[in-house]
Image (cartoon, rainbow, N blue to C red):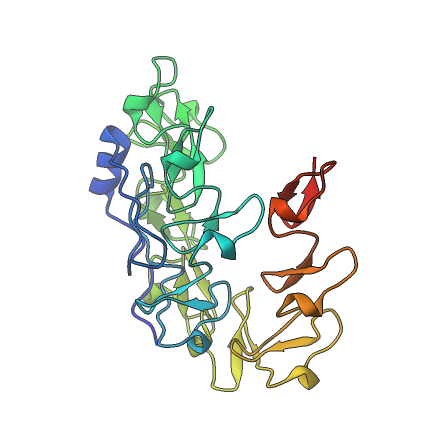
Length: 296
């Protein structure tokens, strides 16, 4: 159950406009839109999650096991589904460090909401004279003159005057033959039509076997590594470090709920036993919950 994936990429004209003039903060509530909005500085237009669609949670799986009311498979529907340094549920339904500019500050005050990352700039107008160009990764850089101004195999983009991986497909190697006109990086694919039979799904520039359970056979499930494996039907099919069967996803997990954990790691989060899920689970000496562990 999926539409043609890969249309998270917008055209070069839109990319130029964003880099030159910026964009407004239009972040939407996670899980309420079928396509991601821009949270102040995103360089992508993205689907929810990896573009997978669903009727029920069992259709999802992989890295996006939750089904929203709008029929999209996502990693999170609220901040409660996220942990530690990626504790915010972004507009694309993926966990990250920000969903809007309000979540950022200091030297990186703008949110690239599609990636869930705080960045230095959203447009070149926010950069200074010494580094006047806002690159696709959200950093202010000096304007380039030619490829000799850039590192390694990068080129000087002829329109944006920023060092980039590519400006057109001809700049890319055979293993990654397509130029992502937004990230200015060479990709293995731009949509499903660029992939082969073994890995037919284009997920953010890479060909994968699956991004959701319905990409696999009926007796298989899609893992976080984008691979189809035999689905579990009960705990008897699981063991070792992942003794619990998540029957909805068809995957073996370390835990499904807190009662499956104990000792120094009593909380179940993202199907792992963790020391903490929130700062409230930590002590005065180590008051901050960071990626499931208490820290000072």
